[in-house]
Image 1 (cartoon, each protein chain N blue to C red):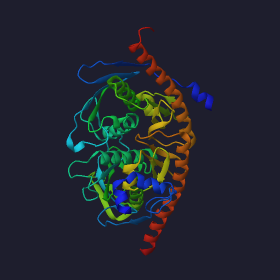
Image 2: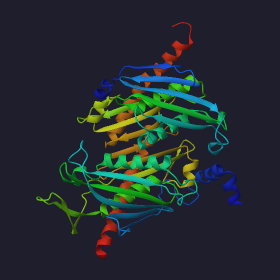
Image 3: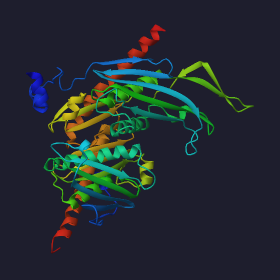
Image 4: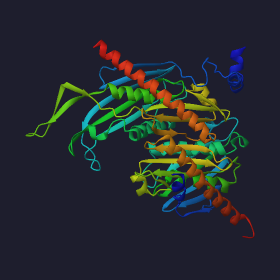
Length: 219
Length: 277
């Protein structure tokens, strides 16, 4: 069982471009297969008095869908992304200031929440904000026959019995965020966590390579 | 003196209790507040329930309406949950459009209804493509003292179990629906999802059923939803400090125990109401 799920560990082609926008302090676009998200970070900047926190920065996350206005689903995704970023950012270094992270959906072909997280992390890195660790998002789908599919497309998501998205930190490979849909057993959950942790290795290696490529003279 | 210490140094105040493995209100770390349940509280609703977790109070009313099914799902009815946090329940909520917490809670309840299959949407269909039920589940918090999600899920489940829908037939000649209000039957509840929330204090200490104060001091929140077959319907952790797999396992074991307690409580309350009638 364990072996089959790990051999199944396939992520779609993924890529990232940093500093593509001129106005924000940090920006990144992240692509996973056909799913694409653009992120921009503003801050640390002045904060509205009503949102001021005396001992740390206020982080605001805005998710813009491709069409229409942000609804209840986007609000709940915003909450997930914001609290994940809050856990990894060292917000107490910028008291009484504001950070704004804007995530614009370019195209949704499944695993959107994990793409949000990856784009957010890349944009925060580009903005040069102090962080205690990096994080990445991995989505797992359990298909009707019990197979675990990592980084599913929209079609695979639709066919799946359960869908889970985890945010994993780079230091201990622990779970920062978890959001699930559908029902599953405890065993399946633990398996998906293991698979996601394996997949996160690939992601963090990619982070490392892309930053190395940007900042080193030789490669 | 103690009151001053609590206001000036809330974190230290809580730590001093946690060092002794207890909490300021006298509970142990894995102990829930007293849970009380009252069903059929609103006589004008089709189903209703009132739940109290200590001070936290949530009331749920269910209103059923006849409607046309959507074009994408002609054989299904639907459920529309809504969580309302009025300014009455806590000073931190302002009047106006729902805030992030209320919207996230509404989405959470909608996800649970879908994931747990507590009611089959097919059961709400009366005539394919023509007529179905829509259940408006309005959850209102009357007193906010933490752990909103758990209270909402119990209120929703109890209210759904209490819901009785009138029989509807479609007249063949006029093709108009006829409602027989005297003939009512209960909804078919397939699963019994129950939520168990935890707060993580100082990145390591797990506390079950946090109060408002504990929630605001905690470094992370976690909600596990399980049903009677010990299947997980939702593992909701919207960020916060990282957690290992073992810690999650601990939470899930506690959640299965809680599920049994709540299911027993709901059955007991329904039984006692039926006895009175």
